[in-house]
Length: 120
Image 1 (cartoon, one colour):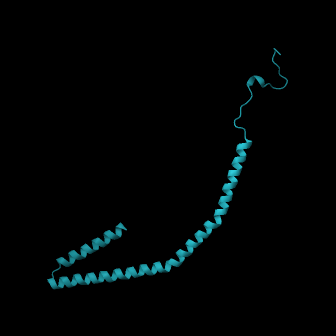
Image 2 (tube, one colour):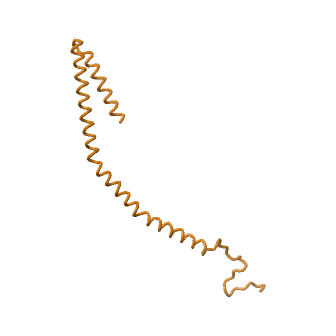
Image 3 (cartoon, helix red, strand yellow):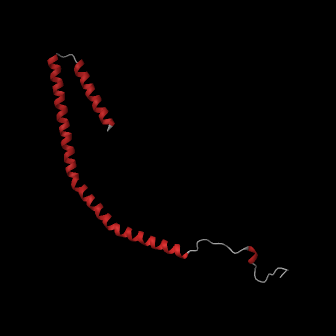
């Protein structure tokens, strides 16, 4: 947007300087300025009309896309809720069945089968 604004300001300034420095009489200069303003206004109106036509042409497609997006959201919502509920259920089961911590037996109590210490 900044580029277009700068371009239009530069164009207007260039036209104004060109018209004001041209070797014409005051009446001719005023007429040239009036003509330039009229051309600019006409061009602006044509651009505005085209933008409005484009918007009107695009509006049905935008409305249809919005409706489709709403339909998808409504279709996906129960699936997402079901998945969320199942996850909570499974997480609750895992918490109940898993031991809180694992602690291995002390080393003195673990002997390979068939090995006794000489003191026993």
